[in-house]
Image (cartoon, rainbow, N blue to C red):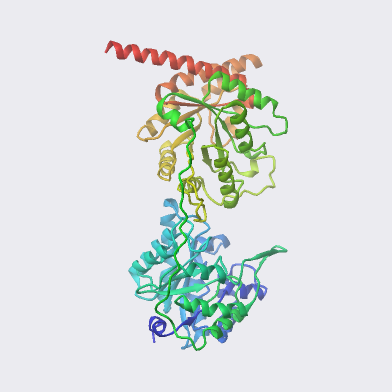
Length: 617
């Protein structure tokens, strides 16, 4: 009898966590490699679950794709590992137990355009390996990103008529990380040809049940549930799960009452949990109808807008000046606030405050931006890097910024920790700058990173960084276009040091319908110029600029030459761009104050000339 025919007539029990059991045997490395090196341990794991009552087992191939195996240098052994896994599972299963090929999600890397083709190739390779060995069906499990799951489901459905089980994973009960309700996700998967739709991983039985209570029984597909044994506890460097098999026995009946036809276990579950599920459904027939609880839809209200214009709104309508002022590396804030005050009096539109620039620890930019706004009435563009915070910290940081009324954000990857003053620190990089832009835009819809309602919509304007100091500016412009597709509202460039480069930036970006702030950093010495050129990522100076700085005879001459170079760049920049982004060197704010006044003077001259030209015409 086929797997689908069996599901039509009875509730089937799946297996539990392969990795948990192998880990308990003392194995702590790439579990999929064990198909080649320790096949007996894998066979024993399968047999233990079958002995406990599993009607269906999954191959030990959850991470056996090119992308994940490359972490262990095993990317060229995809076929060997998957083929061996199916043969091992078949040997353990005999004729009475179904074998499904497990293909896990690449949820550690968010699904976006840059990764889509790579994920498709990786999925196809693993899929064909499993199909060639003759599995009874496919199990697509632990997909946090619904777009990724629907993409690979379409690929699988195009090449096979075998049963396909699709299990999504939720951060919050009943909702996926992009805010899609579980019931809506199931409907989409069913429409695309999934034979079984369900959930696995992340949550224990209680929250999985809570989510399933709000989902109707599908019209054509069957429901599945593979909860974790519990929420994990971190102890002595290991994630540990509570083991209460009797708890699973009670929930087996609850799952059956919600229409579940296939139930098993995920992280932390063992043969004892599977045995408990089997005992829990003993004598029970599957149900075809149930009463669905109404989904708690939380209304998301609009955020009250502030009276002042955002930086984005200013640069859209007029020439605008923003100035970067680094927060201190120590606790003395006197010079910083002196500089902020002087720049406010000079007429800048906003400060832009880096997030621990060059991976060096500084006073929190959120704190300083809040104080500058409160005490001086000067808005700030706050940088957020992907380097220093995981997803939890990023969302918390955004919630804090929103609460403080800080509305302009620059989303950047961030310099690696190795170049900073804490070289032993760990870079996080849960997301890329592309992902961060997308997540902030999701935040603006009132949806958290995990898909949960924030009850209010955010009102951030997001800037993206653009580095024109590369050999192929076209490639850099293509990356910028992707950031704009992800939701970037405006752009800040890395500092440029030649008039030719400014014109090149304009030529490469003139088709983009977003405002651009062109970066200009006044040089203060020849050593400063050489350091920037040779050691700072993303910055290149022309030989002419370096020669001019080197020819200066005294420190004062060097500063004046740096100002002269900056003025020449400004003369060109204001002909092409509405926004000028000045970077203050070594908190020497008097330099950027002087350049601010120069920009205002040149702007008045240009506007006067434009007015005269218009009158004459």
